[in-house]
Every structure is written in C-alpha cells, then in structure tokens.
Length: 102
Picture 1 (cartoon, helix red, strand yellow):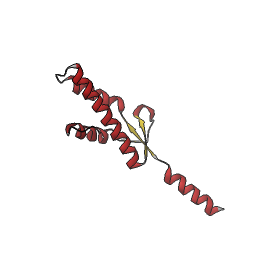
Picture 2: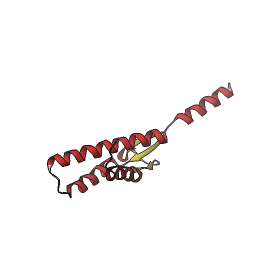
Picture 3: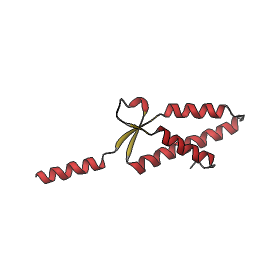
Picture 4: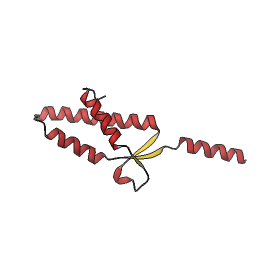
C-alpha cells in the first residue's frame, strides 16, 4: 500500500507542470509602440500585426510543450513563478526578423 501511494505521488508530481508567467500586455504594448513608429499603411500594419500575433502564439505553445509548463499572464501570478517574458520576446523578435512567423 505504501509503495502504491509513493508511485502515485511520484506520477502526479512528475506530470504536474511548473507555473511560469508571461507579460502579455507589456509585450503587445511594446510591439504596438515599435510598429507605430514605422511608416506603414493600414494594410501593412494589419499584415504585420497578424504575423506578430501568430508568431507570439506559436512561441508560447512551443515553450509550453517543450518545458512542460503552465503559462499564466503576469497579473494572474502572485509570486513564485519564473518570468519567461524576455525569452519569449527574444524568440518572437528573431522569428519576425527572419521573416518567419510560423
């Protein structure tokens, strides 16, 4: 019985994702400021925004899958969660600069 409880406890802790935080508002605000500083027409801005949002979504999904984490937006976290904002922003910037997005 004790072994069964230990195995169950191990499986639960092994499969439980770690909680991390991501500053979605700050990231989107930063993109908006940078995009607004460019001389883009409405169609170009729409394409750029769509590409950014798709790239951001993909990077968050990949990070979550690769690191077995639960990503919460920063306001939802009281304390104790690692902040992955810089890492995600860097990955998105690299993909966008390379002309990627997916």
